Length: 382
Length: 180
Ligand code: HEM
Ligand code: SF4
Ligand code: SF4
Image (cartoon, each protein chain N blue to C red):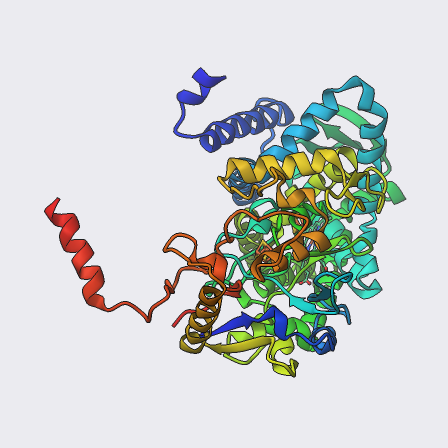
């Protein structure tokens, strides 16, 4: 593995290369050695490749963050442990169902937010699935005779159907259905963002609003295409097709780099019941100060490992770390220490730097420029 | 942002106005993000206010596996991003001050962000604007330094002499959020 890695500039470029090769192979199989490529979809195909490369690069650098790495390391270790299989299975199943498919926790933030996001998320995932399926030629439709259509997936003929049947129209209308879901969700989100004063102070146009406008442009032009050929007998169809393609290309290229990147990181939520808190709100580790249950052993071990890996030295006089105490004790420790009070906890390791360093306050007043120039001069001399 | 948050724990009279003010803040869902607690209930009724120190190198953000805790250009450490937080609670355990709170229902962390929408315009945060005893203050950098010098002198009277390396231990922690 290491030798393979060293033949690339970076981990990210290695994984991107692998992803591109795999996609290309799948395309080769799907399109029957490129015999039935849909050249109309070329723009979509190129941007889909960029989408996957972007996701790979972002995921690679995300996984290399010490905190993410530690959590994933434990997840993989637990997944391999035979004794934990039942817990793993339950954790992943429950997270998939409650957290990702139904997104119950967003409904707890308000039914409006829940419905809004559920429509956006599933409209978006559905559209992406259909788009990738068609652009990479993973599936296409074959007319067997005047009465039957057949869906071909990776070159393997699957279900046949009547072109006017319910199943067929569901599949053909797939993108329209997902686009309609997206449209409703996005309009709900925009209404909330325009009307809600609390959101207005914190939202950022380029981060929170841009993706919504982009989704809006994409769904409106996409649905306009259907309207054009169904109701207006193809009026402006080529122009609309081009505009729609442009919006989709921008969307696919933007996806890995903006707010929407939360999609690929959400599955990590399964790590919580799998590694840490098995049953919601049930803790198992005792606080070293007051004895109250506040966490679990594995999580505290991981937190300390992550902080240690990033050179945080928070060890106290008695050998404990702040994370060995519950939050209330931790607040008390700090305050007693700073008031020079004798406490049962002992002394804390020096102060945590809470100063962001834009000014460096010392005890005296701000130092004169002269002081710094002196230092530079001395450095030059030596 | 030119001003600094400054805390003097022993000025706290335990009225909890700061918590009420915090609950009032837009977007807080009527849940406060700061703390008022007894220092040592068996010794005295002295309380202290506590809120996020907006660390220079925030442990909370460092232990977040989802990278959900963002830091603004002024150095304010924001509450978790709503779409990214996966609800692991690492931040609540990593923070040396015990600040981030966790909402199990909504599956997200929320914490003091020093009323960023106010402080970025040099308006005092909710808690500082209501504190009747000046335990929480939002003041100029110069004024803060003055107060800290006084405190060191007090500590000197008690017979403790700070050196260049440990002088920070002799003055209360403060919020170092300032830029020009
Ligand atoms: C399926 C897994 C997903 C999960 C668990 C998830 C989770 C979340 C959460 C928790 C929020 C914050 C919502 C709030 O608090 O109101 C959010 C916001 C958002 N998500 Fe997702 N998301 C997922 C997939 C997607 C997908 C596929 C898209 C595609 C476009 C998407 C687009 C958005 C947008 C646009 C917002 C911002 C909404 C706003 O402006 O308020 N999400 N997501
Ligand atoms: S939550 Fe804790 S670690 Fe994070 S900035 Fe505030 S005081 Fe520092
Ligand atoms: S609870 Fe949320 S903000 Fe806190 S560490 Fe976990 S993912 Fe990050």
